[in-house]
Image 1: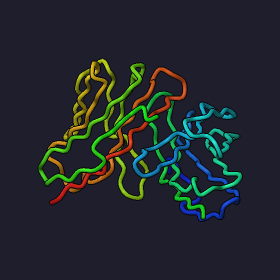
Image 2: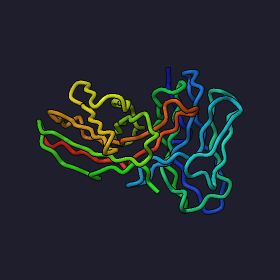
Image 3: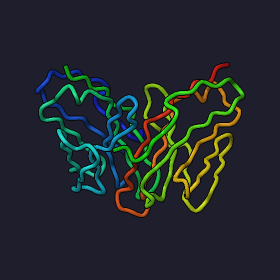
Length: 111
Length: 114
């Protein structure tokens, strides 16, 4: 099993550009999450999903949108990137109320 | 507003020493307290977790101590090894709530010197 994979690993955007980050899991997990990691601030939840076709806002949802059209995939979109969105983005998944398994991360720089 | 405060931000310990990381939380409704370990360039991975009905949990060289009245919990790494050098995150969540959302502390970078 690959576990949780994220695409791409690195990306540089210009202010105002858009992009989509893809997260895929092969563990048949119901729950999926998107976090951003910034120095000294730990991991902050952006959006999450408790099942296919459902999404909900986390702690810092502004400027991001998500979709969960298939159980194994969770997409994070930035419609108009801003320098404040420069961060490392992690996707995670879990089976119900158990351990969250994290992907390797995507390092995004917005110029 | 950070609901989980973690300290210190970094610490250096000699091989064989004890590393201690502390966390304090505000929401008394939290009922699940995991610790995650993250190596450079990798995603975090669950290290150990505790529920508030126990005061201590030990797994190998890693021990969580939990003080419900003080709303604090800590991670002790005994006999620290260079391979333990990583960033450690405490977190708090609601295991009975749908979504199993976690609130993370700011992280502690641990360096174990040989």
